[in-house]
Length: 265
Image 1 (cartoon, rainbow, N blue to C red):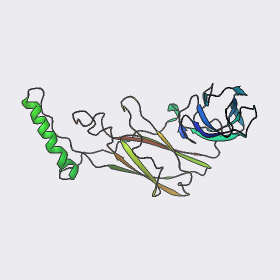
Image 2: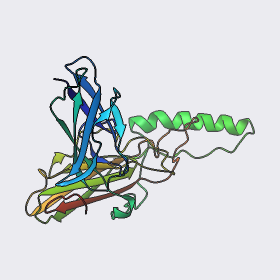
Image 3: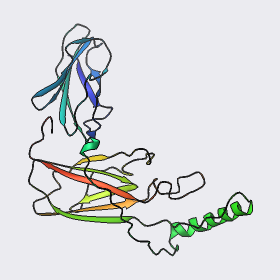
Image 4: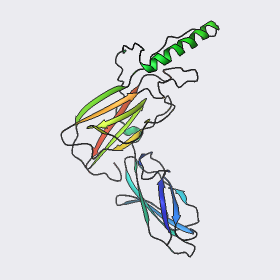
């Protein structure tokens, strides 16, 4: 019997923290010769959010007609009909939506509360400073502009937060940064993403990540440690090696604990 495989939600496998809105669902076929129809059901807990019914056709993707809410654990299942109009077994995938903008309560934190004393003898600045000064001297000599002082590359900032979390079945860490971050919870790395939160035109929008930290949060006191670097936000990303393209480094995060995750919160 024909069966759907490689189920993806918004082009991702079992995604965590995707945007709210309509869902783009896609799949591939195994067994059989040709898909002639499909049926999809999208659920959250015991609630059915959408059911397609038997839809004729060989197309292997569709979009839900209605949006899904934020902070929702959902599932969708699909079965296919083959060239003999015989239905196969159901295949199932899961997904979870992230925060709506109105749900974001984490405040922006800037770790750079004072100017660091950087002597520029480290490898990065020792290489970058002479190149910058040479370029600025040439600019001023050409009469096309005034030389600007060198702004040193700064080391990563470290932020530490201790907290006591309430009991609950499910724990999610939502986090974003103007810069690049890496996080550790009770000494263990949170997720495996590198160069988070990704590359964005930061004066217009930013991406945010959702992490399942249920297994990392413990009873009693917990420690969250975050390293925050310049990234593209404040690096030499400009064509001419300009620094501080958008401003200082900033970080925002929040941890949510729920007794039982439901269809709507």
